[in-house]
Amino acid sequence: EVQVVESGGGLVQAGGSLRLSCAGSGLSFDRFAVGWFRQAPGKEREGVACIFNSMGTTHYADSVKGRFTISSDNSKNTVYLQMNSLKPEDTAVYYCAADLWGRSWPYGTEFDYWGQGTQVTVSS
Image (cartoon, rainbow, N blue to C red; front, top):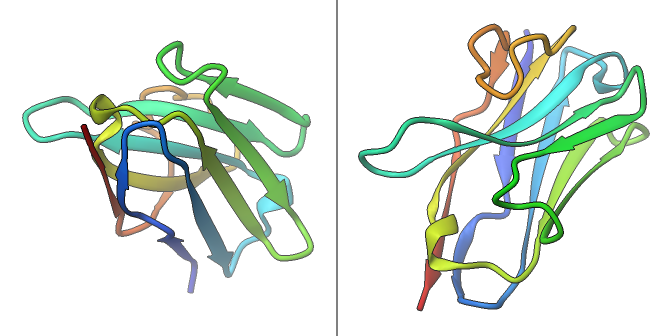
């Protein structure tokens, strides 16, 4: 059974940092594109960052460039999202998703495996 599980969300003040983790089981992340997406109440889902492990490339939404960093530890089959200089507008439920090709990045419509989400709340 394939599982993708996020952890690391929480409440942080503006300007603070959080690191989200996405652990995979039943699949090998080193062959997959693994993306972080977020959805705030009343807003559409947004692609935040994606790592294409088979190509060694990363992509970011303009809104998080220079503040967020996505990385992968293949020995742990885990992808991380380091979030620095957090802003209240970063508040959302953050989801991790994996797809063999990642062709629907940043929309995520064809990503096959999704986690349950983790809440990130940034207070002003």
